[in-house]
Image (cartoon, rainbow, N blue to C red; front, side):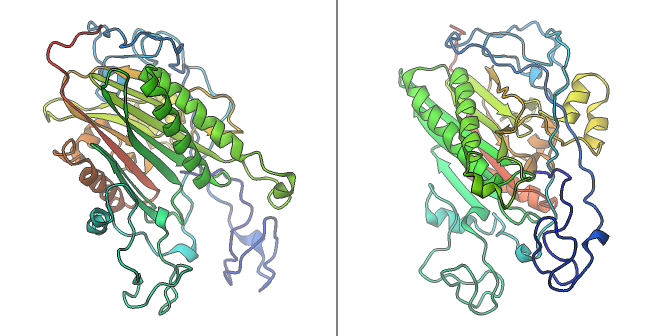
Length: 451
């Protein structure tokens, strides 16, 4: 994700590449005048959503059938697929909602930084690593099989225990640079991309069983805010906390939408806890922002699809039938989304603006207010739910574009499809970390009602 424009000096001297301390005016090694370094370019601001879509936790289970008399909006909006929030109200942004969009009290800039020279070596292409993933098993990240690892740069030297090639000295891709996981029919893939020096995304996928024996699939995807400190830790903490909350609540009979709302709250608390560090830790970096990340999650169970989010990570609905339009199920907490919702700009104009990707909602101790957004849907046909960070949707932004790049057999081969989608982002430039999870949605039972 992006960065707040607050860096006065580069991390390294432009002349001799020696590391710099925050606030240095001259390089201690070569004496280079750092004031001559041009300031970082301004980033894109974004605004928040006006209504949170969060209702009381004591909702009917299953939720009532949504109204069928609505006139569907453009296919990229979540209102195209009839849905309700946890209180049974129309979703924010729908024609009958009527409430104005309120501006956010703050905006956070979040854009991928330029690559560091130390990390010029790109992570393995997921399509090349596919065979290694399958041999490593369905439950872990991709690791080289066998006792001796071979350097990915020179393909000759042995990699030592510190992760460096003994022949050419190259640092090897870290375990988190590329991760893959399967849990039954749900799968996810995360990749560092081609420009970031580390992977600040995180995900969890899993399965739960409801009290009546009905299976439930779940996926959580988090994107660390690069302008904050320890964004990789924030995304990992949030994804794990949310997953643990869901796996505890769903078997107890909690409504999936209420469970997802509480899971986002738990994720927020886990990220906030990262900011509770001893005062001595602040002495070396007093102006750093608190750890922060975005979150998006989905639960799929019998005839019900639930999504929840804070920030600009997204969920899409892609039907198996290619003749049925795909739908974006989430609305970004972003400047561009605010402009579109307020009717001030078209979607094309808003997302072409340099401020488009500035986020206005995130998890973190410095967030203005936690407003988890949740919505439930009842698709009438089989499909697949795509849960992803902006590292993917930047290269397939509209629902139509996303449906074109999702493989036709994604519901049957979700891990393969996730690899294909990550590869699509890398082929497009890989400017950010890329994470995507896929949850197949089976055909609803014939004659299933809303009771």
